[in-house]
Length: 217
Ligand code: TZP
Ligand code: MG
Image (tube, rainbow, N blue to C red; front, side, top):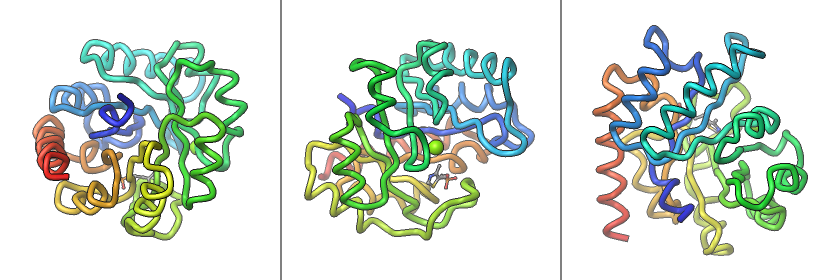
């Protein structure tokens, strides 16, 4: 189940879409076939307080219309207030076990990891999936680590075959295949869709590509 929703995992905040309306970009991405959405409202230009809540609520309603899970990045209180489908946290955020306790057993918990040890601890703490990256160079995350290719994805997939993995970082239609071949259930991406002038078609092409590769695995 979780593996299916990780196939094409779109991440976006209101600051990721340049001159385009973020809600319009999200709706088109949903129409194009993204399988999960994460609201990642971060950085200097990001919305705060009531504005953030209201934007998040609009994003969640759109996701519900298209029956796509809505995940909140970092902000456990926001996820709970909205009754979002899940939360995604990094190594620098609240401990995964504590977040699992706060959200209960039903909600989706995703954790970013960078090696086998962190993956082990994440699944032990109750993570439903792990995000591994950056695979390639990214300009969407200020404090991104050095790109690590697909090596860690492969290692984690071998050690923990039941732990769903999503690759992230610099992924496009042209370079995503190695992520799936390494054992990723799918790809998470921001700019490939958020910066596209045709997000619907871009999402559709990405989705088609992923389905094609998964079929062969
Ligand atoms: N974590 C690792 S890389 C990254 C995050 C949030 C940014 C991914 O964005 P893009 O534009 O798909 O490289
Ligand atoms: Mg975080």
